[in-house]
Image (tube, rainbow, N blue to C red; front, side, top):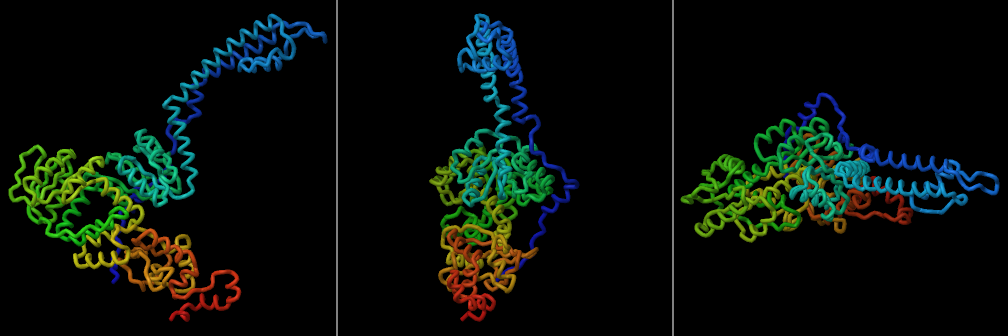
Length: 586
């Protein structure tokens, strides 16, 4: 049964309200053009070369020569002097041309050789220094990146911050065939772009993202810029990126990473498409796991990396006193979420003497991964019945934590990556996740069984299509003359009676969102369908979306001629079949 809800009013409209005047986005950093640096650095060497060449040519013109048989005095004219000095100064050495030189001319040529060698050595030394100059390298790279970005003729996403999270998101988007541009303030992560073995060439911009011109250089001013991901480890920088994009390009969605409630509220005022706060997400998931284990299992499975097996159901989780051992913002955020869920919470610092009396669950949430794992090991030895949740900051320590296997792992980069990919590929998908988190366990159990029966136990891929001439040309043409329901889009192209390994979750039409639309739901141009499934199933679905005869088979269950010869033989039947499809349905 389809569930209908009104789409929440997107707060991103505030960003367009904040933009009172359109301002051109700067795309060049002042004083970094490579040509300017070359002129400034090579001005003196070029003047030296010009001076030496001029003196050498003029001197050779004035030197007396050997009288020639034709009666000339043997002096060289300006062109012959320039010709001789040119090949002499460059050490090519063609000899005495156009005739034998006098002793004076030979002395002057010898003098010119030494002068030119010194001048050229000085110029080459300055040129080599220029090629290693950091300002010149930065300017040259900036111009090269700018050219490569301007030549991107398809939508691209700007990823600001290429740490562990940025790399994970970049690899996921690259696997999906989406073009990306990376902006990073450190040169080392930029160099990793060449060794990360991405399928497509990724331009890397080195610069400070707080400068609007740097974002402009990364392509924010390009019409093909489809989104900006602020994934740096500094939430102040992420807030600045949100402010820049919201004021200069309010039409471009922003997904920003935040850690504290204050920064989250500030970002909300500028209204990015999604604010990712892993602390809030983990608190919600933790309380969900306790109160609604079926919903928790389904939600984490849908958000997991493609190919993750469905986890076994965990029930009887602790519902009594929780102890949060943490320092910094994490402890406050998690404690507030647990208190909001009506749980009794006590807190302690990692350096305190911890009392585990009447404690049902412990969250080891210190800033140090070593401290958290040591505390968890001590509790497992002394109180094995206590529920253990361990926070992990560095991906390098994940193998240790996976071997230890606590009851719950909080790895912020993993949560951020999940949210970012979900929000970028299918922004409305998170609305379905929120719907599941508010649903009762019986419904989530039934929903899990339906999805597993259709797509299998491995976590599915999220996809989004829009009924349009571009995304679904066959369906678009069909709707120009007749109606079509949602169900045929999920039928097998080999056997009309079977379904492909994909399942529709949402149908968005204007301001209305239909959750779990039925197969008989009539489609309209502009409808957005969010679905999950196997990649192979989506490949089969493309035949229905792009080929008229395949769509006809999916709708009616009957084949129609596709070859040109067979169409000519059955031309009338082809036309009648397409004009009156209902007559051919059994």
